[in-house]
Length: 336
Image 1: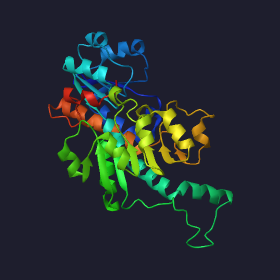
Image 2: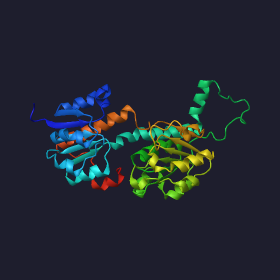
Image 3: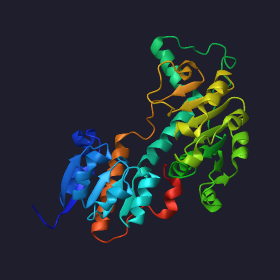
Image 4: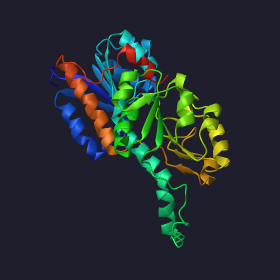
């Protein structure tokens, strides 16, 4: 055993260790560490390995408490793919370096949001399924056969709810489309919105004046039911609502009712219950396009998340500044 190597506990779902694409990332950390690879889900299961570790790389569970960390006197670094507010508070109080890779998902989520916007406006998936089934309709009486609800994105009024990394990347992707961009984010300085060619507005103005609304706010207690019955009712007729954030942001009952009235279109990647119930009314609505929580879940996101945590782990060992550290000022953006 090399006494100069730091003891690192990697606690991730078992599939991470079987994935060949991730092998180079693990090999990188093995060069300067003694590693234990585990897949613990509960505090009781993880405690013995946690007490052994000087550094931990994990997702967000099990949540780390004061009592647990008291038994880990050698712990100096925790890297999490996602951090919760309670865990972050504990680690910051104990002055244990904490890094988070939540933003690793942002590029893929932003691209998915753009994909869903274009799909909803141009009805791409509907055309694809009709072609597969041999039921497609070809233009015979041009332009009378054109569906007026098949629209272009260019020049549309777009509202983004939650203007963090996902919203900002989406704003960059939207620039060639010359959209009128509004953003709602109570934590965002106006100058940041302006740097992305967006106007920071209140929630009422955004919902009433946007043709397309994209939800990508953080999953916090304050954001629960951020889009309630009033906001859903205020979306203009034939507007498009895209949710790549969390289902908890939306009053799903009110949204389903508005969709059933056929006055609204929705592109939904997240749901109150996942997997979505087989008998969910959402499955029957032609004006609702559904994807199974796939926005960020591509291999590039996973590789990016682990690489971010490895970068900060090495920075900690070398006494350098970490790029992805969590500070007390960021707690309001973390999940409860």
